Image 1 (tube, rainbow over the protein chains, first blue to last red):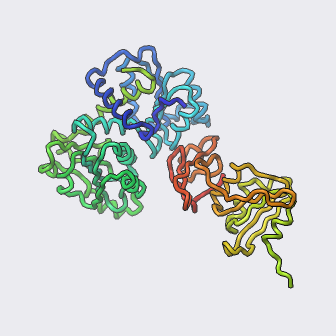
Image 2: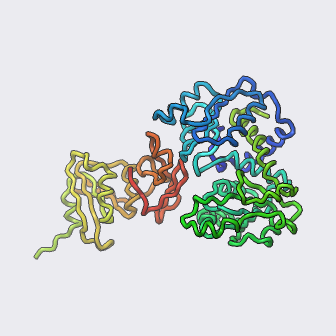
Image 3: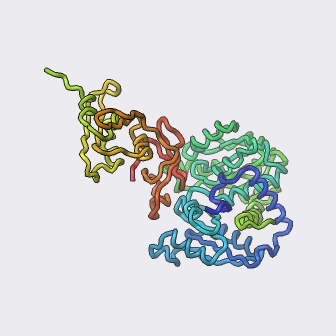
Amino acid sequence: MSNKSLVSINDLSKEEILDLIEKASHFEQNPNRDILAGKVVATLFFEPSTRTRLSFETAVNRLGGRVIGFSDASTTSSSKGETLKDTIMMVSNYADLIVMRHHIEGAARYASEFAPVPIINAGDGANQHPSQTMLDLYSINKTQGTLYDLTITMVGDLKYGRTVHSLLMAMRHFRPRFNFVACNELQMPLEYKEFCQANGIEYHEYRDFSEEVINETDILYMTRVQRERFTDLLEYERVKNLYNLHNSMLDNSKPNLRVLHPLPRVNEISYDVDDNPKAYYIQQAKNGLYARQAIICRALGIDC
Amino acid sequence: MTKINNDSLAVAALKDGTVIDRINPEVIFKVVDLLNIPNLKNSVTIGVNLDSKHMGKKGIIKVADMFFDEETLNRIALIAPQAKVNEIRNYNVTSKRHVSLPDDIIDIVRCNNPKCITNNEPMKTLFHVVDRNPVTLCCHYCEHKVDHNELTLK
């Protein structure tokens, strides 16, 4: 396995996370640099994800590299029954780095074990999506000036949302305090609460999305409550609007509060929040470009 | 009437080989599969629901003229953590030990997550032991947890 692969945010030490954040900030100041000249990056999207693919491909293009790949596995040999191993080995003949997204969980970890080139996981099913976590960390650090001692309120689908799980685990290095706001069906799973306890992280659980909770928050991390997650559709109808953020709810919030969301949003953040300077989700997505530029350079061993 | 002591009979009847004792009777055939016993040519005795002062009822497996390596025996700890292994040479018990679960379980257990790569590619499974009592495993690939009553052998 190439040790420069990035499969899970948990593969990164605190120092590596901080180093990537610093490098991402350099890319934000100057995102167009010719440091990937002569490099070919393959973006293999066995499952479509336009947002993530465009972000990675823009990152490569702005650094002067070339991109090959596919955005839908139905046009590739994997639809004919080719193994993932054969596909990855074949592409490794052509590319210096593989960015892959797959609906099968563990696909990127497996690929990183035999591929002769580094692998960046751009999402493997419900499992890991480390570049999303890196852009979340970058956005938190940028808006708060630090990652330490922050109160982070996570709202919505805390049961299935992989972004909140990865962010929670990555924040263990930085003495966070968490508020988990969710309905009964979508509570933070026990294993993550045990993780908090084992790491001495304070957390509180709420059923109500109240201004009281918002007003003590530094980072308000909203997620989408999806209908298909519910076994009881009556329960969905009952709760679907309880975890929506409206602009007036931010009236007495801390001046440094920022609203984050991994996107796409549906109705969990009202459009009247968009003009509030505390809304940060669009810039957050933009930060993904810089975070991914830093991740790509790390994977290729390029000092930047 | 003479009372037959199952323990002494089980051990004494073997000249050379391995006795795996104190197996929970409910899992004995899983242990048989785990040790690949149906494919052995050796003489094998399997006892089920024998009286045990330690466990109430127990299972026992005797394999003649065969000694298992430690890694193979330790796999038993996955399903029968209290099992005891006696090696017999020339009717004498030459070693007695308990099985112990290794830190990593390679290609023995199937991942219960149908979306896991190990269920979708021709490859070995790998689990890390995250808890020993009761046994909880974590899939190296998809990171799903599997606890002792959900274990499925490959």
